[in-house]
Length: 118
View 1 (cartoon, helix red, strand yellow):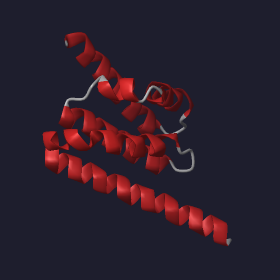
View 2 (spheres, one colour):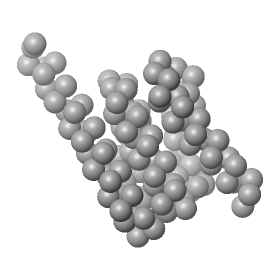
View 3 (cartoon, rainbow, N blue to C red):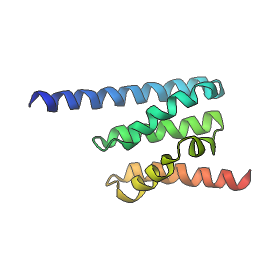
View 4 (tube, rainbow, N blue to C red):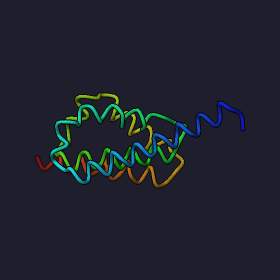
């Protein structure tokens, strides 16, 4: 394996571990994570937009879902990060992995249902 490929693989695994760590902290901290959501969302969105790893995108989707569930921020992420919706829709229609598409569907359907109830 060439040096660049090894480094890319290492960085990909690093981001997966970071994503899992963020997910765990959000699950434990719950609503107290509201004040950190603005700092976390750019990292999560960056992971979603990275086409190099399906696992990274799957972790990012779960983490985004947990941020929404824990903080109650349903609409705010779409207003603060206008590219989020297009990123999620791109994943929904282009992602080859079924698990990632299911996560996107759950996240977008859940958000639209909540928006209609509010």
